[in-house]
Amino acid sequence: MKPIRLISGFVTVGGWTMASRLLGFARDILLAVMLGTGPVAEAFLVAFALPNMFRRFFAEGAFNMAFVPMFSKRVENHEEARAFAQEAFSGLGFVLIVFSVAGVIAMPLLVLAMAAGFAGDIRFELAVEFGRVCFFYILFISLAALLTGVLNAVGHFAAGAAAPVVLNLILVGALVIAQSGLIPVSPRAEEIAGLHSGRVLVWGVLAAGIGQFLLMWWTARKWGFRMGITRPRYTPDMRALVRVAVPAALAGGVVQINLLVGRQVASYFDGAVAWLAYADRLYQLPLGVVGIAVGVVLLPDLSRRLAAGDDHGSRYGLSRAGEFALALTLPAAVALIAIPVPLISVLFQRGAFDNTDTAATAMAVAVYGAGLPAFVLQKVLQPLYFAREDTVRPFRYAVWAMVINAVVAIGLSPVIGFIAAAWGTTLAGWAMVVLLWRGARPMGEVARFDDRLARRLPRQVLASLVMGAVLWLSAQALDSVLHSGGWRYLGLLALVGIGLVSYAAASHLTGAFTLRDLKSAMRRG
Image (cartoon, rainbow, N blue to C red; front, top):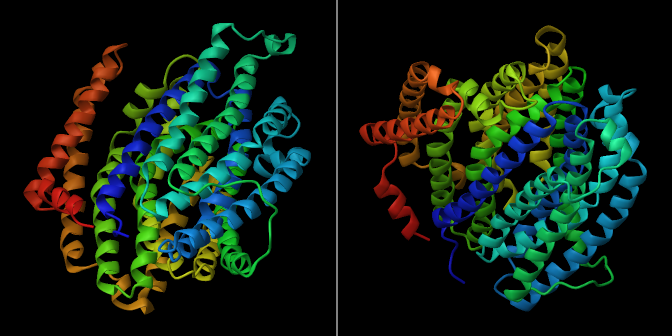
């Protein structure tokens, strides 16, 4: 089987992720207009976060980090690989069905664990109602994530990267339908602003999970991996998978605890859950396009190269992943820090989303921007461990990061308010990068970036800072346009264009990254 083409894989996954995140923006803009930061919006955001949290815990995090390297070693023997995938599919499905039923029963406790500040008001009641509808999303999306891992391991990235587009298309459609009057409004929904839209939206979440699963199931079948409903068996292969997956699950649990801490802190400040959620949406755009693309493509590539004893190829793959990630992430981080207010005001400020919401959300965007390179570097460094089926050390590092997050978020919230939650996330992200980097030293040459990246990193930083200065000055010059009705969209588009041109020019002048590099990387396997 041919080696995975790294940069072309990054571009495929990143391109589809960009489409998904842009649709996600459309969804969140509609959500902000219709629901603002009121009780229905906060209840929906917490309810939707529950299955997403456990999805990362079970599928995209713990399970796939263990499954993909073990599956990648079997891909040369198609029947052996298919049988292993079927066993994993059946085992994961059984666990998820039991867990989903238990989660629906225990929904009041889960909501309190996510947002204790909701207790005693309408947000708690609504979050429990919404959560019980959309919690089964975890079953379908987790099985879809496993099928995505199967396809990624054999070099087919497009369907898995495109699946989130289905989610956002359905949710945008649900919001439009909710406003169309096609679905009758219940008497209680008439009493609570936005409740009708919220209810339609949570049913849309469940429908989106089913749609994503069907897309991945059909695509996997097309490529020779037909998955059916079989009785789960605890075979030696499954025991080995569980042995690797449990530490990864614990590490995933620690990451989710970090998110829980942030939401708990935010739930004690009116509107803060929504402010952090909208800020998260903005910084997740570059993180998804770059970080997730790198993580998805790099893990199976490293697993195969290490199994073949190709240390040189492994180091090359790691270095090009780091170079590609930082060349795109550093300017994105600087932009989030330099112009957060224009970004938020143009994208979200309308309807129920006012000036106060813009100022608070923009502050969170800038703080998250400072952590964006760390979040992406984690995606680059973690495959070094997971490709070796080492999930224990990442768990230990995640525990230290969790402690830092909790100390900062909880300790500083009485002093600086809800923004302490964002600072906790950012500082914990950088702590995790330092620990992963130091822990990889004994791996030798494979875990070291090459001289080319060492030369170019300072140039990438310089080019990004030049772009940031140009963006800040341009935002001041365009301030009146950015606050002028329909013209503000053209103003933001002009800022984006100025940023792209200034970064491209600075990169060319400093030698940070060139079009020739991209073309060369696209041709290499």
